[in-house]
Length: 128
Image 1 (cartoon, rainbow, N blue to C red):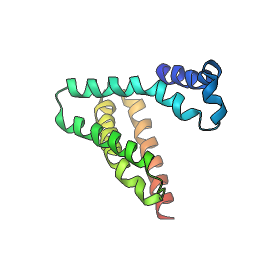
Image 2: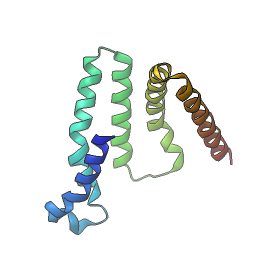
Image 3: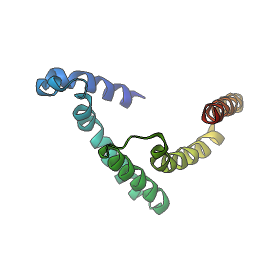
Image 4: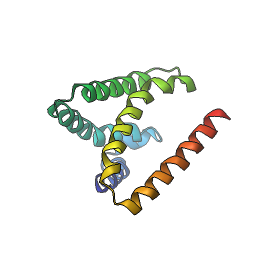
């Protein structure tokens, strides 16, 4: 969370420090976000590769390549979000599966209730 706050503050201050990017507003967030998040992405790739888990290495590769390709393409339609979303859902589900048993019992029930309510809202909004 602290890393996210620092990254968001850097995104806010980069147009002030690097004024050339401010003339492209509101797209100045694109180069500043690349400047901020590129080292974090590289660190994440190195961490996944170092873990010797080939499936998650493939999922990270798949997600990053999909995000890069679909960001470059000019065809923005809602059904194209499913291809980049699938590896991210699998990574998130495995993370929840690892974190949930480590939570205390009273917080675990609250987390499960939150997951069920948010998933039901997702299904409701997807259907309608």
